[in-house]
Amino acid sequence: MNRSVRAWLRALVCAVRAARRQAGLRRDEGMVTSEYAMGIVAAVAFAVVLYKVVTSGAVSAELQGIVKRALDARM
Image (tube, rainbow, N blue to C red; front, side):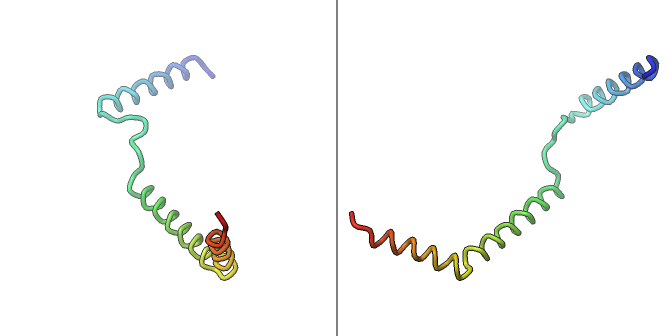
């Protein structure tokens, strides 16, 4: 890369960093509202899938069998 282009890019980066510092901005401000919404939608979708799996006939019967064996165990 040409020296003048490097110098120009370096100056641009320094100017942007200075402007962000002056404005009180940090590199990572956290999630924005749309990211929170997408996270909630993904969590709800995962919860629905997990609920469907756990309440399915085979899994429900297996869980009941595990609980029954645990309650019938001798101490």
